[in-house]
Amino acid sequence: MKSIAEFREGTRDWLEANCPQEMRNLSFHWEDAHLVYSKPEAGVWLEKMAEKGWVAPTWPREFGGGGLDSEHAQVLSEEMKRIKATAPSSGMGLTMIGPTLLEFGSEEQKQRHIPKICDGSVRWCQGYSEPGAGSDLAALQTKAVIEGDEFVINGQKIWTSGAQYADWMFALVRTDAEANKHEGISFVLFDMNQPGVTIKPIKLISGSSPFCETFLDNVKARRDDLVGEMNKGWSIGKRLLQYERSGIGGLAGASKKKDKKVPKNELAVLAKKYSGEDDGLIAEKSRRDQVLVHSMRERAFQLTARRVSQENSSGKTPGPTTSIFKLVGANLARDFTEIKSDLMGIKGIGWEGDGFSEREIESTRSWLNTRAVTIYGGTNEVQMNIIAKRVLGLPD
Image (tube, rainbow, N blue to C red; front, side, top):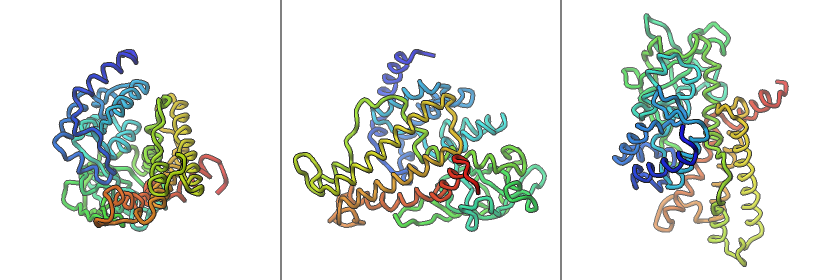
């Protein structure tokens, strides 16, 4: 592999020559990702990055990844950030089911599914929560019965993010109703484009519909798309959640190099604009304290994530400690938008109309959106239970 200096120079030149201008300087919420990635320029960018293996730069080359070690992958990340290049692909394939299959999948499953994640041709959604099984996920009742070489699945999933755009679902299903509820669960994969799959988007308070209800009526899954052992899917399902939580909490993208410069503090800029400025400082002391405390917490979180990333030389996602990052990261995201709206006063609660700028309206929607961050991927209460039991070793 090339030296870091050679790799950086070659990567910088390649990105400058191949990343479309339309795929730079984009800012969008994950709920709108399908709109961004539907652009023609996005397809060109995805194809070029997939050819390099850089959609999933650290995954094995044999499956379409880049085969980079963590140090070279970090250089790629830094160079993409330098030109503000949008990631060529996103979603649960890359952040959740892909890493899980690389760890637990059979060779045939890896060969069949991983390359399609790497080239962006298949999108995935998650079938975990049910109307009666959210925080108590092991209470799920969606059933799968073996008929010949297939599973026949019946039940309902809810909060299936992006199901209306997904090609495949990874799901936890009950395959033994008589077993202990944690033991009678299996982890299966199935094609969403088949009879019996009904998807109904759920409109949120923010106005968007990223989550869905998904009804499964005699849906078929291949027997060889059972991941791991029959009735032993609970441990695989939990491991996938650790991958998810590391991404939500910000651990997956933790930088391993010292920042060259500290970006402007967005809250401080807003406070000066809406609350006034006094000799270069935020005019109101209470506002200064509010911004300062949050900024210190955010910086401490970033440094902790970086330290954990550096200490984890294997490159694998940590175990139960991901719940710490999920909990703290979710609270920081929620608090940031709350302080932001508070600083903007009446301008921070605009929904529509000429009296509000586009940025002010987006601020309101972000404030509403971040309430969901403390719920999806495991509620704050669930994360605290995991930390108490699995990290601190406290008794039940």
